[in-house]
Image 1 (cartoon, rainbow, N blue to C red):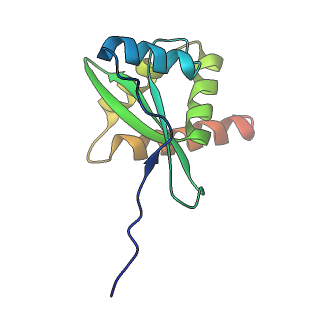
Image 2 (image 1 turned 120 degrees about the vertical axis):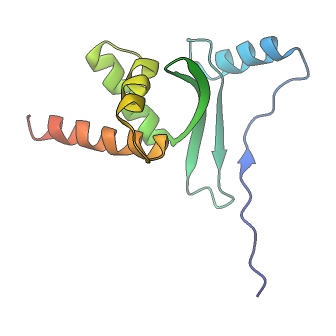
Length: 120
């Protein structure tokens, strides 16, 4: 059975310059303001749009791929609590067992905003 292959397409391409320059320009172009590059990907049908951000979890740098709604929720949480994405991710990493970090972030955000919605 021939199944169509889903391909994630990158919305932007890095300019042909030095890696550090391309990284800063990508961060500036997407308005991150924190010097971090963000990349957006979508499925061919345009149904899901995700961002990939470079983050620091504890002492290691990694990338995290989440849907835009989750990044918005995480950014709002950080603004509300006066903290950073890196600090939240590092705290979650300490509590993580066999769960993928992205899955844990999604669960944490849903629980956090649910508690706020019910006035807890």
